Length: 447
Image (cartoon, rainbow, N blue to C red):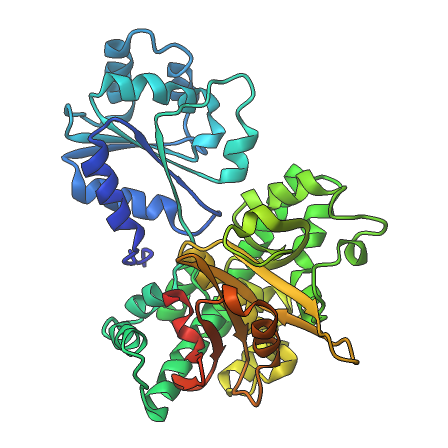
């Protein structure tokens, strides 16, 4: 059976580009491998254009690649392209797709002239890491509109499993600060735990719908993880990048204030591995949360980029990576999430999914740690910080209910004048605790 075509929010952004750009820019969709870039682009081309041509540079033959070495005569170029592909192109009614464009730098350089010609529309897809690496000797086109594509978010996941109206109720509850009721929240959390287990990689979701078997889903995710680690080995043959990637669950489980690079690679520091860490960020397989040294609007101005946490961009992959060295039946997170007994010992899974949801909703990730001013000098941590209006919103994440929210309280004592609203994300129903808005964790993307 062919893979399903899932409804994705990026489609509406592509429509907006087509209308507003009117061929004046190419569309570049960047994202990690296997997030569904090629699938959504072909679906968009099929539905929105009279004809489309796909040039997949991972398999394109020499004759097609050679065309891009000389585009001085565009009439000849397009005639040859149509002849080689067997696709007819119609002026202002056709789109040409450069899939895996990073594998043919000359094609990317040609975008400047192709867009100026204005006969057809152009869409490029590729991994941001490879796109940035494969630019030696070429002029990077400025005529590009760039869009980031992430794994399916929770709303897209609900669409995929046939529960499209569900998230509308979630939005209504959030927008009106109205509790859903314990029974409804339990149902919502059951679906959300399913999302955490499966994740948002289209192949994994498709495997679940096809087989209803978590072992089949886990196999798909293992293959994707192996693909990612192979990619890291290519950019860093020493193996440091793949070791840093593989160690993300272990580092989060230590419940420390940051990712300790030196505990994974002997004598290494974040500053010494700066370029490698930026490459990992560019792969879009990882979400970095940086420490905000002075939590105020404009976090990036006061961030410590050597002091960070790393999360996987997809929590389904995170669940599998945490037990990559064991068989699926031994995966403790699967068992505990399914039985709703995750507990605080594995609460870092919830922190990862909140990071994923905030990032895919368009937020950069920052957090804050500080010492209390009492005799104990206890360490406190705000899991995430958001800028809203001209103030900030501290967020604390709990893996179950809560008895206290000391970090939020101490943070308010320290920065009362800077706070717009305080949030606690947990597994229970929406409620207010004084000025703290306690929200079920599946509402994180709405903040």
